[in-house]
Image (cartoon, rainbow, N blue to C red):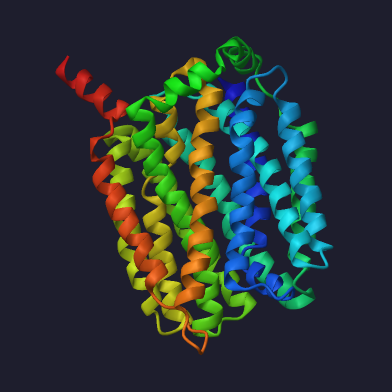
Length: 405
């Protein structure tokens, strides 16, 4: 058990570095793209292209996670991300930047799916929520720090600097993985035993599973929100409506991640006690409510308060991956995690594209962002809330059964 604990913590460090790097570039991505005369639709396209690449690689990455020596694929994913970040920093036109974002998405998909699969193999139903919450809390710590670094370095050294910093941070993560991370032998053995089950038939079985689809919809909705609102609408709104600086943007996004960090761990432990579904539904309801308030923030200071509330709302669900792992058969967990990421990355792909389009077509002649993009996202979340009310909750079912006994 000690080796598993050490593995989880070491993998958490790697994931923290990756996600810190990914959020380093978010505050200034719109301004960097505008150096190449990008419109709001094209800015949304940069985020969407990253999600599209992950869509294409999620299922193949699930298969890689179940092969022998999965550590090599963790290193491969991180190396691709680091190289793509360097390409983005050296970009001289929008299309090079777009290609770099797609390459980055492919590398991130390989790493994230493999890491989630290994985490699923290392945890059990009884403690999965709190363990994955600790893992997510470590990632949130990175995503809290990232925008601050990104905003500051862009302000001090230029808009390409965050991309260089991203390349260095993920390069360090790759080195950590190669020389520090140790995967317990029993986890590697369990993934090897599962490898023969990763087939097209198993994928169809998962897709036809109502529990998998409903839980997938719940998690997709939160990732779509992150793509449309966190990564696209909020930075553009802050710059164009409130006159925020690059440093302001970094603080705003860090506030979201700090709030999520503070609440994810206790929420994860709570999901192990009361169930995954109640917390997920509460999170979606709170997130939709806060989103409706954001476009009415009159100042950056008011928006900062909304960002804290927004981060708390997102973090209420705990680790959404725990619920998906619960309803996925263990012998197809690699494929299941690929499907999980496929749904989530679809949200990260379609969310920014729609958000960029809505912002572009509804902006006033003076360049002011209108509330429609926030309202549309909130309405979608309310619809999802109704649909997932019928989703199963293995944790809650197990506890009810134990109480009856």
